[in-house]
Image (cartoon, rainbow, N blue to C red; front, top):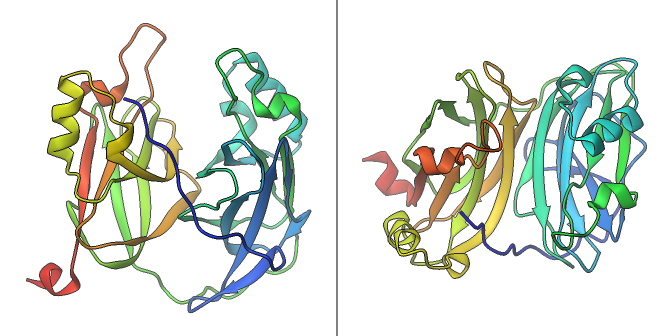
Length: 285
């Protein structure tokens, strides 16, 4: 499965922290360039929302995890560089946002920041199959969470849950137009991800599958990549994805992990689906 090109929103010209109305969740804007991140050194504890802006000339990602106490971001990056599991080094994954050059993420990544914790931020993309990964060129950083008292919870936000197991998703097949927060839970025994891509306008999952059966390129059938949530078996990520659902569009969900180098992608084993955006009036019926 080849995921399509990304698109994005205009760049944010204000500071790194802003109020997200109406829930008043602070937005932490992280800027990516070729090849570094610019991010606040410290954020307040409690619920925060990440937004990613790409000011570079290459495609980048914002990949966030919470480190265990005593683990440095350099320890984490060295493990990624060696290709060994980072599971002993992290309390959990948060999630991933994407942005094309000169654009910003279509979704936001929400997490509850624990006082005194450290978040590792990394980009594992590379510009070509033989090029170094971006973190090897310095594209990683850390964000510390202050030890201030946790803010009072913001207004409750409706959440929609996607469950993963071997090898299928359980999920809402329709979502009403408007803002939605997606929660991911891995109830399986192996590592899974929830990758969400908007299909191009007028494209359905059936049309995408027909093209894949013919081994045709499907890039033109895919729209924006909204992000990824991933977790080891029996766990949930520490982050949630929030984005606006548009009526008449379909949202492809898939898991592209493999159990080992010789195994097929979970997507090929049936771990995919589509969520349809519908008008609010249609969703009520």
